[in-house]
Image (cartoon, rainbow, N blue to C red; front, side, top):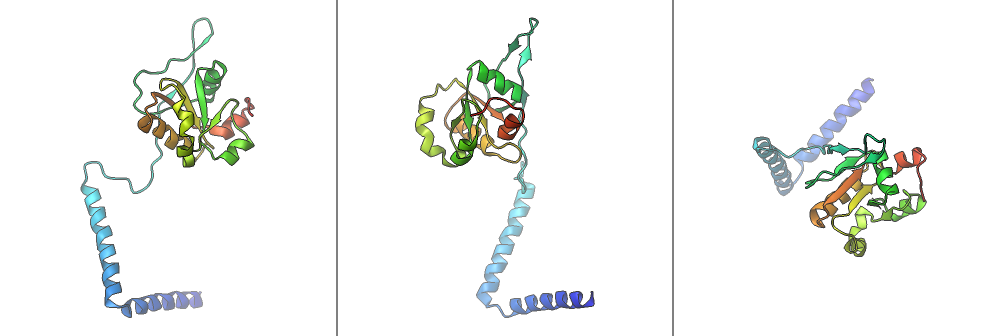
Length: 190
């Protein structure tokens, strides 16, 4: 234990020596960087809505398929969406079966080719510019369902934001459960 403590102290001493023998220019550069970071954090603290220093998970409103008095499924999409909405696995399956939507896989082509929701098209978020021609043929009012690998994967959210905010699609939904949940439920795949 004493040897470990000695080595730790020796390393600290050597780091201090390195700093002492740095050129004046190097010290000034490090000082300016540290000062910039300090003032940036202070400014952020006083902003009306400070920037988050850690990425926060976005929480979307979730909409589901409803059952009417006759036991039939119904789906009502809210009018004038301002951001993508989250949907459940049951809703994805209902909209897929009734052909009311286009399902978009935001994963890369390799993952898409290994397996996907039946009828899904591939528009990888990392390369969406290369797939613009597919988007040009889609009606802006069509329901788009975007999914990826679920869990911590944010490709579907990023692509949904692009489709809604940059491309002008009105009805963009995100299936956060993604491919793992769909496959695990034994629903139709390709």
